[in-house]
Every structure is written in C-alpha cells, then in structure tokens.
Image (cartoon, rainbow, N blue to C red; front, top):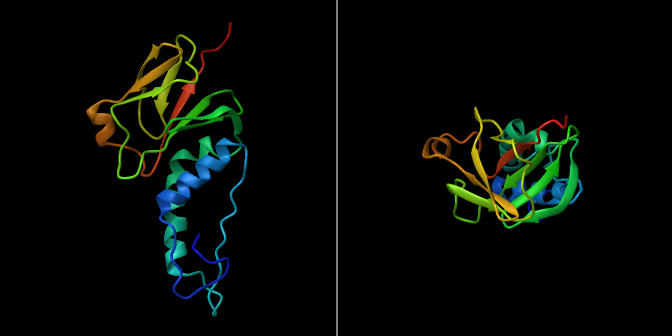
Length: 167
C-alpha cells in the first residue's frame, strides 16, 4: 500500500483511487490482490493505511459484485474499461477514469463486444438502467447529466450488462 514492504514511519501511501484501479486491473485478468500493510512498533496499523482501507471498502460496498466470485472474460480490457463475469453470466464493465477525471464522461464506447439485443445495462449502485446502443461491433453507453451528478461511488464505476434469458 506504501513504498515499503514493512512499517516505515514516514512511508508514502498510494491514493485509494490508484489502489482501486490496481485491484480492478488484477481481478479483470483473473488475479487476486494482496495489499501489504505493516503494523507500527505498537502493533497498530498506521492511520493512513486504515483510511485507505476504508475508502477501498466504501468502493467495494457498491461494486463488490464485480470483484468477488467473478471470472476473467476476454478481452479483459478495452480502453478505460475492464471486464469481469458474474456467476450468473452478467458481464461487468468497470470504467477506470483517466487521471484528473472524477466522473465518467457522458458517452463511453466499448469496442470489444456488444450486449445482446434486449439486454439491460445498469450503473451498479444507481437506480434504473442507462441508455446504450450498438455501435459497429461494440456499443456506446450514454449517461444523463442527472446520472453523472449522482454517482454511487468514487474512483471507478461498474456497468452491469444483463444478457436477456435465452428461451
């Protein structure tokens, strides 16, 4: 979590945003993340590391379903998106904004695949569905100003793609 593998009194801790992005990048490739946090001389975790854990936990409380018990799904990434698949088959497209961006853009395109006709796309943690349309071999997600103003979390946003049931 910091620059040292063990406790260092003046260690520099990575921002929660960078740690969330690292977690998402690793899980999208089928891996697990082990964060190293060394206790201080009294056996306590440094306050900065606890703060980071709370911020990551807040993100996971919204987006955990896209991380826990998921599987990697090729192509793993496409631009700012990383992909996982839930046990029930839903695909999670996790948007990692570039440095300096605190919200997803109004329009985001996935080039690698497109949802099946009739699929619903949801911003996890937000009510309702989001608009999407096929765009060549991929698809574009469009967020309203209202959706962008009331994001359910910080750092990265998960779009759950529910495939319609096959009959």
